[in-house]
Length: 372
Image (cartoon, rainbow, N blue to C red):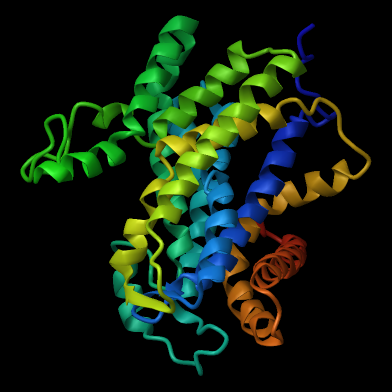
């Protein structure tokens, strides 16, 4: 017996996607609550082996949060409806204008604990090209704009491709998620480039089938062709998650040093995070596994209205949360609590406060232009 189609409310909301959004946005906040335990000082700072273990254990399970958002959007949007220009205009009004507003706010408003110091001129100059040092989380919006641009291009193909052709693309994309590890292996030969990559050419064989585009196609394939029973879904998704988690966590753990505290340049943390990158094999497997499991939710529970409400606020929560988290973490970390408690409590308080702020902002006229 196969699963019924995902339950939709009278407003045609797909219930399981609201659960995904709420869980994923909390995961993002938890990731950012964990970062102070290995990022700091010159760039990398880990106080103890215990902190390193908690970072490894928790953060490795959370790296799928961003790809889950991409799959959620793709599940809803592709193939796109109407012409590409109208689609991009709607996306810009929904996502782009709030992004511009909050980019400016992060550039000019000092954070809690900075003593009111902020280099507004330098920040505004940098915004012409990229996010500012205090709005690093907004990298996601730059990426999602690229996703929106590619959606009208691949939509005609998705409407015509056979299930087998779609599966072939997904398999090639999954192969591309191993390229970062192949580069590491290739570096043992004295050359870290693979399959046509060189100092004068970064476009290797799998370049055009790599990155977040695979999550778009996978989400579409799941919507169109995956109608499995609960038993089959669990039998596929749980082992997939376990294998993916191992691929994410073990390389990070193996690189942890023997002596603490550890302090070094940011490049040290970047090297540790290689298996955490969003388009690598382990993250891809954990993302797909969780998405399949969430798709099993076919009916709303009693507290679904709360999830639906928070889901509608999720983009606003994402935009505002760093302002809140910096202040919250400063207080919670001074209470002498255990490392995992500080991580989870900071994320939880930030989540609640940010949701309340965004809810209040949503009552303001024209609020869609600053919270989406």
